[in-house]
Image (tube, one colour):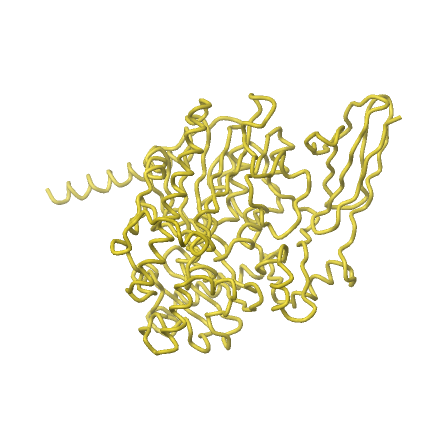
Length: 542
């Protein structure tokens, strides 16, 4: 009888496994509408479907009930701009020089804290690499982004039909045109902890869960309650976007991605390569996915771009380093995820990580530096000031105080299943020597396969892009020909994207080949190799 029960159990497990496989490989529509809802700076556990920390998130609960929930989705960095560079290109930020936080948009006051000679720059992408929205536009999609970009480079006009705080799928002129729309929700950003300090709380500080990286006291509880309140308000904003899809009759057949751009925006979370800095919630709703399903498949941010192209029926370019986890071009499940930490504002470090979903390997290339960095921006958080004060008094416990140690080990290894906060370093434990060697080898292979541009001094890297000059090159000027009622445009520079429009009020179109025009028409042309200055201008056709 026991043998029969074992056989029945094995058959049931096999059946469930097969069903899960089928869930991720069923047929799906061509050129579906796709919406990304992205909130900032939040680890999964704040959502009730991931366990919850004291707040209510009913709209994301409902989305998870309608979709597939991922438990092993990872950012490529514990901070936004490098992660967003990986998202938009499908390539690791370390392989394209986009690893430093950040490269653009720093105020002069911020730059004053940097080493002498530091200047802002736009990352120069490899000539064969384009952001995935441009491929979608070339395939006939309407693309919109509302509103944050932060990709480490100036976006070419060919990327989006619209990128603004009013961008929306509803702004497309043809209601039958397929769309890809991103909505970035900033209310959960790190800065909103202090920016919204005087707003009413939606959760009782006494009821929140305090993680063991913080002391359980009133400062920790009140700061966490503010953060969780912001998460609850973010959930309401998610509900508003979903309501709009339903109002337009689009919800059932639209593919929805919901995720955060990295882990929590709190001290000892954000910017770190521990799971609390890298792991993100990911919920995907699609007509072909089983409702309420859960998967532990490893997914990296470099996979998101390839997956969108796969779902849209667009061939994934070879320049993308990630792999599709849905769609016709779905790849076998990945074995590892990779992440990196480099300059954070004015503070330099170089840390790399690889994880198999359970074990995490961290390589510290600057072990003489502490994990804690004196980042001025973060000092606005009352909890950060509180932790510094307690550390000065010796009032933090061993696990809390290790953040402020004067140095760090060259290698770290953690069993995140049994040690989710990654307190116990197993790198010197002989029982884990085999796993240490495996993940170390995986890290070195990743560097060999894709390169690591942080091996080079940052400003030397920029000067190399710029041909040794102090300013970026200018994209080659477009050459325009008008014959027999057709316009052709050429730019004698590899990697340049070409945009055109016939009126200054029109949306830029992506040039893919000759198009019809009439003598006397106005024509505006913009050529842009990402990382260079754009070129172009306006003319009358004759």
